[in-house]
Length: 420
Image (cartoon, rainbow, N blue to C red):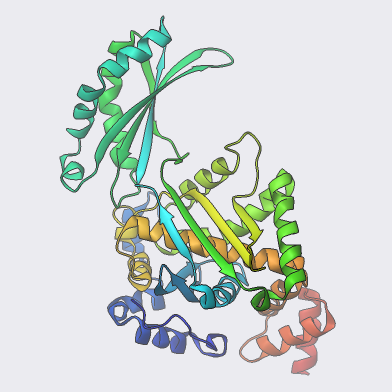
C-alpha cells in the first residue's frame, strides 16, 4: 500500500512534480505512470474500443490525497473536468484521519439479469413451475460460463416476479449471478439468453427481453466516517450540516443536487478506472428512490461525543476485468495507483470518495456557501478562456476573486490591463 496518502502542498507543485511524489509513495505504479502523462489512448486503440472512432477527448486526472480506507493509506485517481472536486474530497479525507479514516464493507458481487415472459395464461402457477426447475436452470446458466464457476462465481439463484402492469401482466425471472471481479453485464446477459427458451416453455408463454438490470441492489457498497467537530468548524457547523442533510432526506428537489454531489466523487473514480459511469449512476439514483420517493443516499448524524458521523450505502457495479479497465492504458494506470486487488475493494474505495465529496459540499453549503471555494478554483478556467497564459492565469484569477466577479468579460479586462 502507499507509504502515506498525506501529501500536503501539491497544489503548489507542477503536474510532473506531483506525479513524481505519487510514484515515490506507490513504487509499483511507476511503470504505468506514463499512461497518465500522455492520456494513454492513441487513435488505433480508440478505433478498437468503439465504432466510427475519429479521435479522443482528454479529461484531467487528479490525485485525491489523505485517504485512509480500512486502515490502508491510498492515493485515489479522479477523472473530472469540474474544479474543486479533487481538492474538496482530499480536504475532508484529511479531517477523518484522526478518527481512522473511512470504514467500508460490501455485499457479494451479485448482478441480475431479467427475462421477461409474456402471454402466460396462469402466471402464478407458472412462477411455481419455474421454481420447481430451479436447479436445472441454474446448471444450464453455469454451463455457459464454466470459467466463472471455476473461480468461485456463477449463477446462484432465481427470483420470479409477477407484475400486473398497466396494459399486461409480466412474468419476470431474475437470474442472480456472482460475477467475481467483473462488472458482469456480458456474463449475465449470456446466461439469460440461454435460459429464455427454457423459461418460455415452462411458463407456456414467450420470452421477450433478456437483459441485465442496472438496479444492482444486491451488489451494495457502504462507507462511514467520523469527523471531530473541531476539525470541521465547530458544533454549530456540525448542527447546520445535519440540518442541511435532513433537507435532502425530506425533499426530492434538494436530494437530486445532494446526490449529484456524491456522484461528483464517485463518477470521477469510476471514469478514471475505466468503469461504466452510466451503470453506476443509474444504480445509485434508482437506489435513492427505492422507498417510493427520491431521497438522499447518505445520512448525517451527531454521535454521542458531538462528532459528525456520516454514512452511505449504494449499488456499486464496478469491475477490474473486461471493458475499458483492461483496454485503456490510463485506466490500468489508475487501478495500479489505487492498489486495489478486487472489484469489491474498488467499489468500497469509490464509495468512500463519494462520501468524502458529499461531506465537503454539505459543509460548504452550511458554512461559507458553495460559491466561495468553487468560484475561486473556477476562476482559473475563466482566466484561460479569456486568453491568459503562464503566470497570467494566477494573476487574472486572483484579481477576479478579489473583485468578487468571476466572468470572462472581467477576465478579459484584467488581462488587457496586465498586458498594457
